[in-house]
Amino acid sequence: MRITRTRSLRAVAVTAIIALTVGCASEAAPDETPASPTVEEQTETTPEAMLDVPDPRSLTGLTEARELGAIEPVASDPEVSLPATVTGDDGVEVTVESVDRIVTLDIYGTISQTIVGLGLSENVVGRSVSDTDPSIEDAPLVTSGAHAVSPEAVLQERPTLVLLDTTLGPANTQNVLREAGVAVVVLDPDRRADLIDEQIRMIAEATGTVEAGEQLIEQTNEQLDETREYISQLTAELDEPLRMAVLYVRGTAGIFFLFGGESAAKGLIEDLGGEHVAEAIGAGETVPANAESLVTIDPELFMMMHDGLESTGGLDGLTERPGVAQTTAGINQRVVSAPDAQLISFGPNYPQALRALADAIYLGQ
Image (cartoon, rainbow, N blue to C red; front, side, top):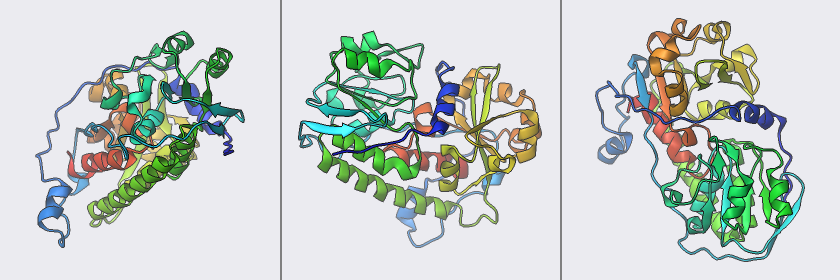
């Protein structure tokens, strides 16, 4: 089956920013907000009643979105029909003869999440630092410097299939691997909720697991519908949506950006029932988070990655950056952080990641 994708230039912009960075270990910070029952617990006891949630504007300080557990596969032993011929995002037609030894490579961890969801976790023999599902934690890392692929390390694992996109460098990785005789399928690097079905279907076709792919799409959509309904109940009493912004930061120097209206952050914030204020300054994919832009949009809440927050010195370091302390979010130190592979991933775990963010934003837990 022929499936062609055209890689967005917007994805290149984000890739250029992220490729400059090196991940660092995240540091947990205590949540000072008193614990309250989860929405699941409340709906179990009072399914007909309006959910009892606090005023999210009364919450202050840092809340860390809970880390997700393993993805539940739709099949433990999926039917695999090979050979499979697909055309990747780079326009190259690839015939896959075997999925016995798979390597997954993207900065979001979306590809490996999909492989796990299809029931092929035991076939993963190489991964990137972003591939964090517990079911593949024993697979060797084939990246160095956090987000740089080592073709030599990939080849050492004797892969029969490499699934990657262009969010990791170096740019000639797929050519090096193909010259060594490896089947390499290049996937679309864009990430949005409305692309999840396409991403799953492409990976399922490349791995010969079409039936499992359709099951995974159905499961993900059902879970996403449930999560969106969950969030609509959390936000039902708000007169105005929370003004939110997603920050991308690494270190204390120049890597400090807002994700704009053409980024995946827009859909994420909309799914969370918030207002994506970065659009107010005409931000496209990304825009520098300087004092002028931050004060202009004045978010009530910042979302960011755990590792990014730690790298800039935690809440204290973040509020020392120009303009941050002058925003409503900065005054209240209202920040929600999430594991790096959860904030902007848009794979099969998106419904669960979205729910974890909603709990952190609206319940402070």
